[in-house]
Length: 347
Ligand SMILES: *Cc1c(COP(=O)(O)O)cnc(C)c1O
Ligand code: SF4
Image (cartoon, rainbow, N blue to C red; front, top):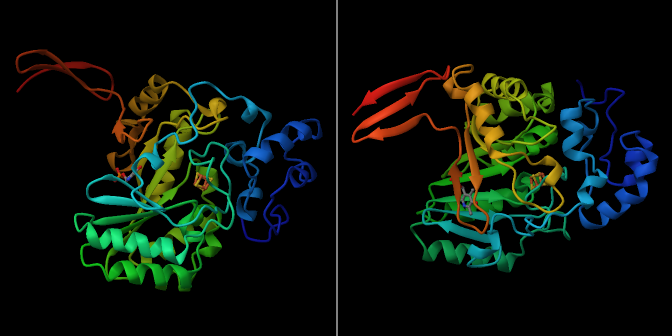
């Protein structure tokens, strides 16, 4: 698909009214969706609004199901706030921190685990907050990696990003700067030479692209990946396992193959978090394990991400994929091969 094709709206869709006008939601849902919109912002970028694929629209078009709250759902599902030493920073692991650079995104994903915080105000860190973060990093030289997230950190202007990265680069203990972003997929036009120049700093800059369906990866998105990798930025991806979007082996196989062919290494497949009003996207962990087991042996090992759960309460991410090893005695094991056949092993 090319920019400016007749199907691509020229501006983002940000209201229930616009979604009705585009025929993306039925008129009959309008009242319920107005209620949804009061709790969780709506925004579909022009690049995503033009894709006529159910696996794409289901991620961005609100539904009345979002009004159903379940008792297990949490406002802060992964416990970001439980480990925040200074505003804008989450420090859960000794060697790395998450920096919440903005609350703004190019799209508002209906399943977002930070849906309680994204979209608020202009959402940018103040100068005082950033100074506080820099002071904390200076005082904690064990921190080796700074992970920019949000919101979507690549929505910041190249000028602002360059200023932030240069100040981080001045801290000798910072070796790696990682961005978690949906921008290369949902707004590939933002991967400009000015942005690439901003990312060219002394610490190694990595980008983890958030993408959930092969239909999202348009020729424009793959061109944006190519610009990043030619600029020397290694690319990884993270995907959220979502009912009705990508919860079958064929859909994920297509996505992971496309990513590898675009020089993007699938990194994490996240089990969906317990964010409010997202029960319709969730599925059992056992289903995720079945899907991962089906993919093992079917696609290259390089194309397989790690299936992880972020333990509610801020206890960290752990692999929850299928097990292949069963202890049967001292030093004795049964190993399951990719086809499901069992083999004894002695260590
Ligand atoms: C996910 C996360 C990280 C990064 O974890 P990796 O396993 O290194 O990708 C770091 N800090 C926090 C608080 C996180 O939630
Ligand atoms: S782009 Fe990321 S932070 Fe923003 S709404 Fe989507 S999942 Fe949430």
